[in-house]
Length: 304
Length: 233
Image (cartoon, rainbow over all chains, first blue to last red; front, side, top):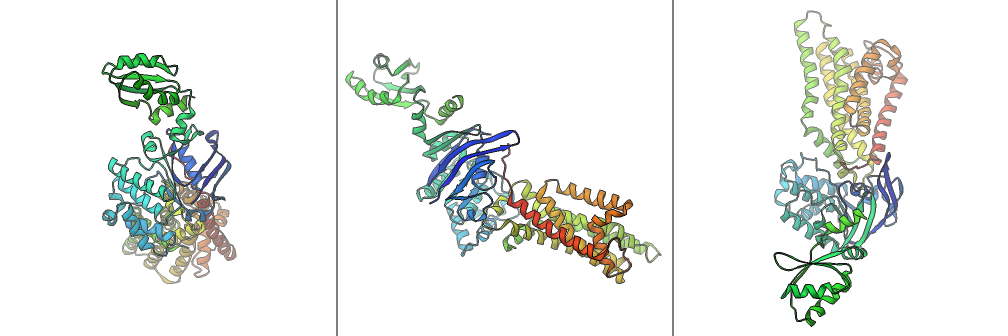
């Protein structure tokens, strides 16, 4: 179990501030680092992995600074975004070299074990330059996991990985998180983060914009209007009932049937809806938040 | 030193097309020397191939290519993080990389100079050139390794050093010899064969070569300790 702690971390390059006064603690479980391209995710990751000195502030792993501290790599597994350029090695040779560099007592065994975990046993005898993007990604992850790190840092791990392999990788990361590994992955794609991480850190333009459970981040923004789409046994009757509620700001009848409802206070609306419809003799068929995706949360955070 | 890094660096060197360029240079030198020996009636006609082409040009070029092959591409594209994200001292990484570049420079470059010298006439002068090439090859490989860790234009900077500083400036400013790796090598070679010049003095040549070699490898390790991974943006 390891905690990665960033305390008032800033990093600037000349006049450009890439990371601005970020304080966060990454603990066991899967955490998503979310932000648009150029938000400073890679810079943050580099500082967490000891590959960039913070201009100010400290990055510590279990109390020890990671910059210029090579022993920290016993605990850290790093999957950089950069392409693997060891094309002249086979997948197995590359993973084995990583195991050897960690001086694992059973490097050969660890190599085979981890190739199995990432489902790369069969192609591991081929040279890396013959691999597809997804295979390279899996070999990179195998190399980062071969020494059983307690902290796994992945920079944009799902880029260019096909959907089936993405599912496989997500399962793997979820399993590692459940086993107590501190897994942090960055992404600019909202549905990825949403599907994998319960805990999310949002960075926008180098600033730490939000932190916490995805739902909590959403609830933080109580003044933000939320939309639902509803279908029921009698949409017009339901619309009349709903518009009388103070929390409801607008009700639209959709041409294809059903209602589009905008509410200002999602908590009371959600609690009221079921008893309300029942007391008016209406039946709800479907209730779904129409903008519950991170995209809209994100747009809201950027605008704020 | 680290065996795994050593192995990977050797694979990086041998696995790239650049290696054939590395081998082609001394082969061309030897070929030209053989040609001149065969065509000229003057028994000493081929010596300039060693003293003007092999030693001052082919040897440092081999050192540049070898040093930049073991470190340059990995630093350039950032994939060296895979080697550095390990509980291995960065100085051990630099030393291991240097050993591979050094071995390649001596085996391909210095040996190339020796073979050319043997073809050109052999004797104690050839032994002198071998010693000079061993000393200079060692120093060059360390200097160019440091350059590769410092700038992505290591090949260009190395070429400028060899061609402009050691070659051109060294040609008409005798003082440059005191700061010329090639001239230090020749000075040490002079101790073996008086056919070679004595541009500086032996203690200076040995001391300066040692300082640049140790300093270059240490500097490369220090740069790796501060290696920063930056994004593409």
